[in-house]
Picture 1: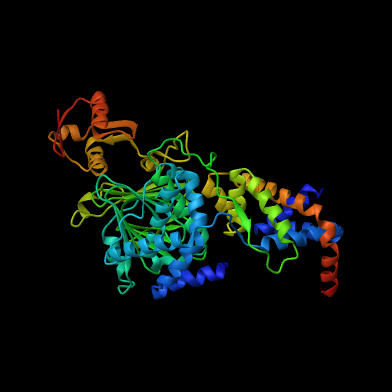
Picture 2 (picture 1 turned 180 degrees about the vertical axis):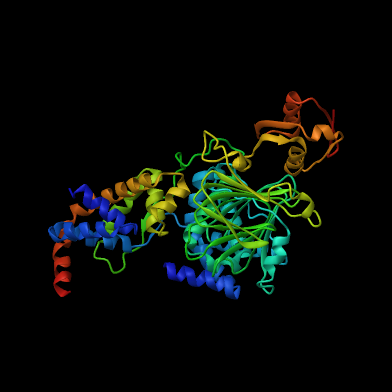
Length: 194
Length: 347
């Protein structure tokens, strides 16, 4: 979902009380938020409850959604608080020590020259990243969060987030380099057309 | 292997973090190197592909949880006033800025502007604290017996809230939409990010403490009267009381003092409550009693006027009422009894 689509949905909730917009956002964010909450709560069922509570509050406060500039950032921060709140009785909660996030995969490629096989290989590389690094990568790539936002969510410095993202990029580049010759002629052609 | 500088710049580009000079560097790196250019195109392609969880949620499971949410939403729909959005969490409190304000009158003054708009109200009772995430991302920690209200169009044009009681604000920077906190006695305009305001209506003063950034304070009765606070300064403004104004001319209306930063943190005595710590710095027993009464939801009676004037200093974290009273008792000569929710302090 693009940032514009998300904005359209949140505005529909705020201005028309559109419950189907709520449903679409819920379906879209549920897997990512539960995985994120689970890194703190360490219980998949409880994490779903935490995310459910966040969405109930989002709906209750839907009139204020038009003022939110970055809904992804907002809902991840809200989930962070809700999850920490849930486990507050436990001591020494640390984002350093994340639970294992769920594995990721690419959809069947659309409009990409990269073969499904190579995309799978890239997904494997991403899944082999340390949990924190993988989470940083997903939050930036899929949720469009900034280094600063991710740093705030995970109690990391901006520099660390940048380093983690660079590590992920390095692994991807390494893999792509192996298949460079395959793609050389296609991209050369594409460039000629421009 | 691609140069590490190239990888770093590609990571930044795909994260939307690339600065203009960096973009220029990246273009130069790519221009001279067809292989790097090809690599960058492939990275673009990879990033265009949506990443999903390998083990997707079963659709029936999502739908049944949605049904449960819908039922929950219907049950809660008639509720007008919102309760605390999220409860205070001590870990979350480590961050930035603190604002404590007060004054019920501010609410009515402010309402003149747009009486047709619905308001969001978050209020705490005695003995409880709360955490609110405002739509612009600003975080608010609300102390006991306090209230924050804001219009439903908060953030659209400007960011204004009304505060009664005490709150700590970590304000998201947005130069185009100033963040203004209205209280009965003063208005606080947030120019930077971190400050602390305290204004309970039964306290005699309204205090604003700045931790970092900058804030502008203006008097409600004299809006031209403005003060710009510097970090670690506190302004104390006497709350006007009907009929008493003329008789109290011996007390200054405003004072600005330097505050003591807490050495091991970025806060000060004024902001310790956010971390669930009670801190007193040469405070009168009657002021302490008022604080304890809000904090623990009890009534406190001091039977002796002389005792009220005694001053105490000290700090306790996560303590019970008994623990606080015991440690105060150790330093000052008094006795106390607790009966139901009433504490009686006697010489």
